[in-house]
Length: 188
Length: 264
Image 1 (tube, rainbow over the protein chains, first blue to last red):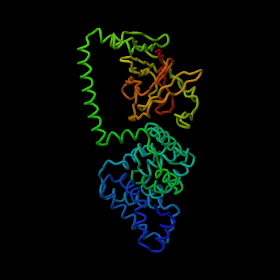
Image 2 (image 1 turned 90 degrees about the vertical axis):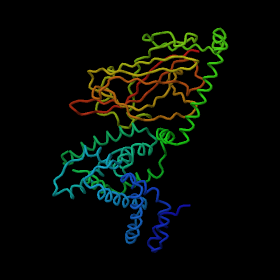
Image 3 (image 1 turned 90 degrees about the horizontal axis):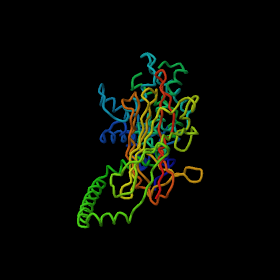
Image 4 (image 1 turned 180 degrees about the vertical axis):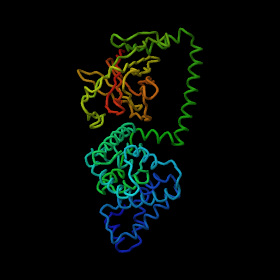
């Protein structure tokens, strides 16, 4: 029986190291999947997940996550992307992460170097606004594919649909996003 | 914007949006297409397939030997006991031809131009909102010429279906392998379920002048369906139609039908 998230978080607050084992027991495989999507390397992915436990230990408290899986998932994604950049600087190594970014690149605007950091934050907010206007299906496929770097097969499995259907929905969502970004002042 | 920055921008997505997908990911169900892919990757699957192939060869070899002993007359009698007369003729376009095996009463047919536009933009097989703008009048599917050739052999129906696109059309289509069978009952087409759930590998086919080929052809059989009765049937296949105007693609969800009659 897996422990409830609230109890796991309380273990972190109590500085009880059982928090780590409970986190690993409940979310270990889930986090490994996120890291593996990006890194395509078991050893590096496991290391990322371990870094996630350490980051969670350091962040809680004071942070008290509302959704523990989301909090841990974002930490893992961040670690995995850092490792990817470090390991593959200047090189293109195939992974679902890179493939998904390739797809998205076609509809994301360019930006000046000076304002790129600000631009990234604003772009993230605009994309959030765009996603809120989409159907549940389109929104979740988009986030699964481009945030979690899940494969087409995996995102299709969210709704038990075929990969071709998922591909079409993503295609159409990207087309809409491109138009939406233009109306928001981003030049694609 | 380079990929790193795109990745960074996605990190700023609102938590509630990510949380929704997060929840879905943790309790997702596997699709039929993913199941078949997973199964085919299992070592036992390959072993089972190899064993099945050996059994088929052994049985087939035994049958050939028996037929050689029986002689032509006995063989003919044996087949006639299981005689199933299929009439797969279809409409004015149907063309009969001799079967591959002259001992079997069967016909080869050419199917229909069976295209029906999806009436709803959010039907059970389609994608909500898939049809855009002024659809369905915005495009004309007459540019697709469908065909269906069916053969009855040893009491089993198999054949090919497919279509050709008009090379002058500003369209291309994409689709997976899946199709399903429907029977005309009363005034409605009713979906016929196979004996066991079918699994489909889902490569995405693309056909159209922009792709490099305007022809698609696919083999099929009805072995997965038991106790088929006399009647009018059709194979239904979902496709996605892309209309290209000024370099921009508009996507439509549609269904192509390949009709035929079966008469026992």
